[in-house]
Image (cartoon, rainbow, N blue to C red):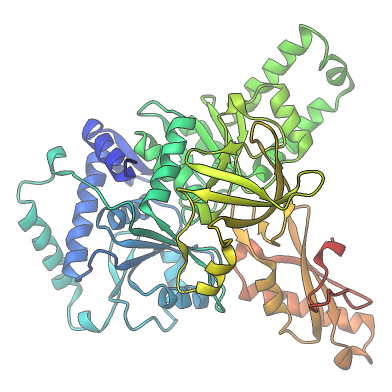
Length: 550
């Protein structure tokens, strides 16, 4: 029987009670494993005070920080259902998702609360607590008449009554039923029919165990968490798997500029870096490409003996850029530039590119760096099966998956759930690919239209287009990605623009661009609007033929 990840966490806490576990980088806020356990139990006393029961929904919306991790783990160990919401969603969307998810409690960061406090919050929400210090920011009807002082006093009294002599390692017995719903992760902030991916404890635990076996780590190693914790990629690979292995995690609590990130990597010296390909591609373009383009370097790159020395020095320099103690460099979310990938493999950099999706929490394919094969997403991970649906002559078809990691479905969205599965229980990924004889997964394209942001955020062009299509003089629009930036192609509403000059239309579009970027998350900002001089081509269903436009 599979071991729930909370059992791993309990074991680590008992063996590393006084070791550092969670730190907000550049700040004094830090938890040892023992302090983490105590704070989780303290939050349990709060949950009891608020009348929360097993299975109740508790939402998290805020930037990465140690308290985000504490709240998440406390919810899991209480056998509640964590609702993880990306902090970059608009306040309107977050309020809608709180309602859609039936959340009873919200932990919220100051950046989110600044805008969210002006929204009408769901009636069932009992309270909103600050991720900075657990202050009560909002009270539902049952707490309206309780002062801050009384609320805190009651909470402290309940905790002290339960643990009068403090928390000791022998008090820690965190567990949960792996079959129960554990997490609802929203893949977008859409106010139409949002997709809240439902994952049980088995899915999350299997993902964590895959990480522990594929990328083993010694207790006390360190890691910098830079991907959004509200996404499964960051949540599993930069929090849950490393923490259950005894890793000390440093959180970048602010948007990581290149200078902040490089300093953090230098200071922390992580054993693992988890990122999206765009990060290493930028480093390659800035630091390696100028060097490798030199004639003398190209000449000696494949020369015996000299080549070995040269590649070893390049590898060392790149490894030092990530702190000097790097053992694993894991990328996911998108294909890597083949030139960059080949260079990294030539120098034997510890690279591995995985394949996954939120609906699998997130892992589908992967490999340790020593077994990674170029241009693949690895092989199916433990307890997962992959097959190709209706392959063509080249073996390419839609990738279907089945196994422990696969979601239970989409919360309160049976239509989307039914559409995601075949009649015999395989989940459709929406991706095109093929398998080789060793089951390596080759991704050949996406059936879906999603883009991946620079920090791992999912960007859904249809949502941006819906907002843009409501702007003045816009007939139809299409969002495309060019060199990491989003560009809007617009065919104007001819009934309004037929008597306008091109300059007048472009002036309106410039104003539309400004309005649009105020309506969408910062990570999905549109850089430019290009006016099309003829209508888009459509399919018989009247949808735009996206593949024709770049």
